[in-house]
Every structure is written in structure tokens, then in C-alpha cells.
Amino acid sequence: MSELNNNNILSAASHFDIEGDIMYIERFGSGHINDTYRVKTAVRSYLFQRINDQVFTDVAGLMENTRVVLHHLKQKLAHLGREKVEKSTLTLIPTDEGKWYYQDESDCFWRMLILLEGTKSYDIVETEAQAYAGGKAFGEFQKQLSDLEPGKLVEILPNFHNIDFRMGNLRNAIKDNVAGRVEEVQDILHYILQREERMRTILWMGNNGDLPLRITHNDTKFNNVLLDEHDRVQCVIDLDTVMPGYVAYDFGDAIRTIINSAAEDEPDTSKIILNIPLFRAYAQGYMSEASVFLTEKEMTSLLHGVFLLPFMQAVRFLTDYLNGDTYYKIHYPTHNLVRTRAQLKLVQEMELYQEELTTILEESVHV
Ligand code: A2G
Image 1 (cartoon, rainbow, N blue to C red):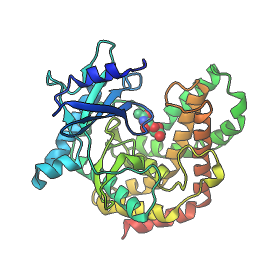
Image 2: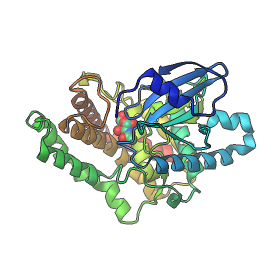
Image 3: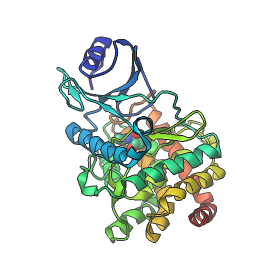
Image 4: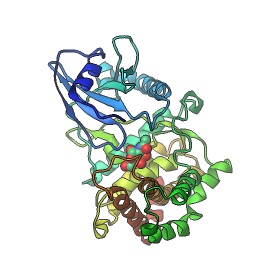
């Protein structure tokens, strides 16, 4: 996507129906895909985003998904009153033409949301209370959407968590070797190929008709939950990938960030160790909401998700590294390689603690 200057951003922002004159615009957050800004007016703050249309090629479909999901969530919470609904769900601001996104002269796509003041998000979980809150937030999110017909949403990124698709992309990247990096990652490729078959369990269960398709979030990193000043859940954010999926994908992706004592891109892999009490707290928080709708087989699938998601994330980071870093934003040349190694260290740690993780999950179902 093209570089932006302040005039482009300001001019795009002026097409939205916001309250008050714009005082300033600044970069915001640590997302890997979209460009995010905070727009401050004399009245309130807004979250302003340029949607990455190389990743989300169907921007109209993406925004329609978001609209449908938000409408459903807001209806579910309507009994709590307008103020609470606005605090607990995202609110899109229309353009002055009444649309949910604006396409500028350079074909950049923009959207505006209310920024929820007084909230916090964490890249690394610090306390069991936070982990529990995160589990409850994503469990509740799935529960609230469990009566929304999956067919109402477009599968905005097809095969997003399909491991066969991701391994296929990796194989293509190895074959093309556009950045000439295949030779240096032989040890990693060996490690990945050894585990490929085992990681197909969820796909296999799904294809067998053992797992219902539900509406899932599909990007349940802990920093996609906003907490209030008392670490209570306020709102689940980043709805770009909300689409039909299996609950184990959301569970595993959340655990990927929650159980890790270090950042997703920690270069010193000796710092990547599992925080088992946080795993237990997340599982209990999640089950406190989700146990009412999960099937027995979905419950057994959760553990497979815990192994699959860091593995698949490693495959995706590595594919991008081999392709010359075209998908994820990087901050230094080997960033995707460092991210890959960090995710695989997590898989390795999980393998060591598999029995403990299994027991905790079984226990949290019955709490
Ligand atoms: O980075 C982004 O948020 C990705 N989102 C998500 O899938 C995951 O890879 C994450 C890793 O931190 C999209 O690809 C849309």
C-alpha cells in the first residue's frame, strides 16, 4: 500500500460524521495488518483505520460482516441501556454519505470507530485475573454469536485457519524461494514437517462432521480484548476476521498469547516459557461462558487448537519470510524469522507440558 502523509489522512477523516473539530491525529496500536490512528476532536477520540485491501480484497464484504456482527451484539446487550452498549461493543461512524467506509482518490479504504476511552489492552498477560477476564470475554463473544446463522457472514479470508492451505502456501514459498532464504531455514522446515500430520486433527474432525461451524473471532490475541481500569472485560475488538470457524481455533489462538511469558516476537527463545496458572485461569474464564453451548467433541478439540495455533502461526510467519516479507508489517529484516522461532519454541514447550495442559482443560470443564 502507498505511503500516507498527514494531508491524506486528515482529508480522509473529514469525510466521516464525527463530532467536533479535529485537534490532532496520531499513530495508534501495534497491529500487523491495517494502519491505525487516533483522531482527537474537541469532543471525543476516534479510532481511524486504513484497511489493508491487499489482505482484505473484499472491503465491502468485510464491512458488511462487521455491521451484521455489531448489530447482533448490540441487540443482545440492548437491555443494559445505550451507554453500556456503547462501552461494550464497537461503534462504527458513518461517512457523510451514510456508508461504513470511505474510498479516497488513491483507492485507499478508510473506516472510523469510536475509541473506547479509559480502556487498556496488554500484549503480555500479567495476572490470572486478566487471563480469566480474557477467557470470559472470548467465551461470551462466541456465546452471543452462537445464534447468528454462520451463513449470514462472508468467509472474508477463505481457509484462514486451514492447516492444509497454510502448508500448501509454505510449500509454494519453498518452491519459489523468491528471497533466496530457503537454505538458511532447513532446521525449521524439518521441525515443521515432523509435526504436520498431527496438526491436521481439527481439520479432520471438522471434515468428519464432528465439529459445528460457528461464528468465531479468528484473531483472539489477548491484546484484542479491552479491559477497564479494574481489569474487567469491556469490549472485544478487531472484528475483521469474524467469520464461520471452529471454536478450537479461537481458544488456541488466545492461549498462544496468554500462556507465553514473552512477546510473540521474543528473539531470546530461552525467555519463552509457559505460564501454566494463566492457562488455567483463561480456560476457567472461557468455560464459565462457553460450557453451556459447547459439544463434547468441541471440548476435546480445544487441546488440539492449543498446539495447532502457534504451529500454524509459525508456518505463516515463515512463509512470509520466504516470500520476502509481503504480508506482515516487519520492524527489521529478520523479524518474521524471529517470530517463527518464537512460535515454534512455544510448541516445543507445550509438548513438554502436554499432560498438565490436558488435565487442566478437563478440570476446567467441570468447575
Ligand atoms: O497477526 C495478524 O493480526 C493476523 N491477522 C493474525 O491472523 C495473526 O497472524 C496475527 C499474529 O500476530 C490477519 O492475518 C488478518
